[in-house]
Length: 440
Image (cartoon, rainbow, N blue to C red; front, side, top):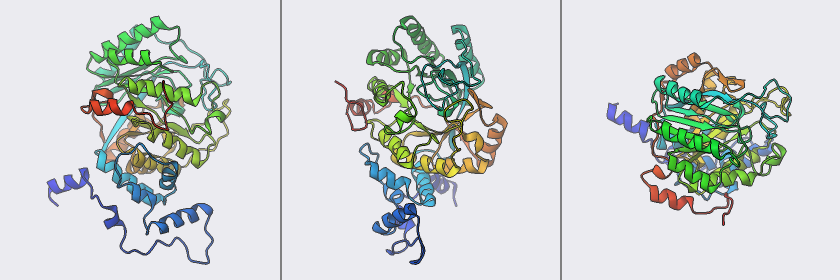
């Protein structure tokens, strides 16, 4: 095969799943007549048969970018046969990204513990008795020095933000721990955050952060923040200062959310996301699986995110790392197949978003992580610690990249209203959907 043809197949895979996937009009058979099927398999078999042998994953992998997903449609994709879901997640991924590029992130905590929120999964909550103790935030000199060291080391993304490792360091929106995320090899992004519920009464500190945003942007790096809840004016000020992205996770579905967190409402989370997007800032928002939720709660989370008027720039998928002393310390870990199912579904319904294989990766073998990349994940966290919990060692990740032929993903400076399609973005951000909180 010639090099040009090989490249075309890599960057623009064959389009018609119907032509490739079915060889006849005979519906697929999952079992013989006298076999008993589980309710889940029976439901999938009926759905596939009704679609002439095509699973919901196959059907929806061909569609356009959408913000009007029905929950039932996403449930159908999620319930598709795993091998089908894996294949079509990979197909959508290749149609929208270079499948060999993976964003690399490293976490550096500069403010740990003492969080006033009551997230049941978080060892940094002051409501739980864990080994994590409250620490003071590093001073401004140390913050800027960390940014300079990250740039000199070849970093593309440093994120100082709230969160515990269970949210992948990309914001367990309730654990306002400051952290840094470093993406290797391109020297482009630095993000800041503070251990606050919101910015009320913190005008002096907020002004300092605005100064950091401007200064770090001047270093030639993208700038990202996670600072808790934002109002409209604060979001506008951050955008004016040069902010590229804002992190705010939803954690789980609206229905299951009160069983995990009581100190902040779901609507407050959606409101902050809306403020950031309306200001022209791209958003990173995802959740955690393994909290005790049901499959429909995972689908509910993806439904909320995918029906935002503008899809999140990135969607972290985190697997709970149960920590002693938290109410969820006895939770069973999720399987790799649950992660693959979640990642592939997210990839199909939000095809242009980054999907981050976040916390919990330390429990997965190299071959299992490869399945996640194939399903549509294109970002990971590197370094031997994710704040208060362990992570894969850097050398192991380097070897994995070599074995799988992966390469670091370049930075993206065209996010939010900085996107060339700025008018399109701003117009979309001001369209209210069922997945968003209505604003006056």
